[in-house]
Image (cartoon, rainbow, N blue to C red; front, side, top):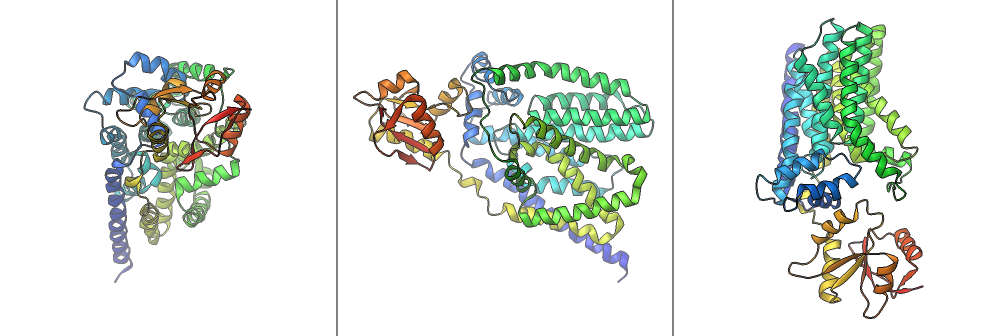
Length: 483
């Protein structure tokens, strides 16, 4: 058999194996819609409750939260289209996930060969981070979609600028509008958009084409995004402003890499092949490397994003794995370019695609999100308060939960047993004093680590009458007395 036939057979086998993995991961997006609500998703439920006036949600919740509000606003409208159920609310993220798959294939540059387009599609379908975002009731799926849109638009813009062509107004509008939308979905999407605009401006200056369009278009988008920056600054500069996430950056970086790329073995494999491909690219193009836009753009996005996050993290730690899921389009585009380059150097590298897709699929196989239950600890704790302690009032420590009191009260209401009448009060010096009087009112501490309980005791001068009742490892209920 000739070499050409062997390589053709390898290509067919690779596409078939990658398709099997991609289709399986697509199916998991649908079956995992039935998982229980996660902690952060309870906040999403509260901010998109169709039974409350939007003005109330906007004033009492969204304007008190640093996270951009576009996802919550759109979900609020989505919940008015049909009776909100667990599956219906998750389908809003699923819609973004399916659109992401379509954009990854049909949004790629027209001169890409079919195999390269399929590589990006298969990697997008098989990505664990992208898959999980597609059924979670958070803004990540929509942020990932917008990053894909404006990055692929920027890819086309930069290519046309490099050829001395002035891109169409429709393409410019797609870039700026999707970037502005992404900025209002997630801060990492905002960072990536302005980073992408900066890289695009660099190409515009290099080829002396469309410099004013890039500059003034980006300035206009930034001006339209500035109001939310003002909201964020107001919240974080307030005396009660705080940032709850603390983790050493080496540990956080390793967790981010595993979240995005998989197990240590898969990470090592990707890094080795990545180094091989980068060395080959540098050796092949040398002084013409800057002109390889398909490689430079996603690499520049990732390097600059890491730099920006590192600077901001000197004050507020942003090294969080799920935040970096928003950058997955850049990772996938870079992997696609590296795999395609190695394939063009030697046809046998076509096997890299199914190996990576199947490796990611194998890592996802043991995940059983269908059986994730809706915070059993909190549910059982409230059931214990109502049915065992026979209490009509519970005092809850709402400090350091990451949410405003109005939003957190709404979240807690989902855990009160049906038909029960239970008054929820915030733990303050006054309510702590009343809770310590007979008949005593139970105190509930969510996320009750040893440090959290110690801080609560010192802040309110209270101690537990006995060791706390612990539910699902992180929710405590106890009665108290003053120190």
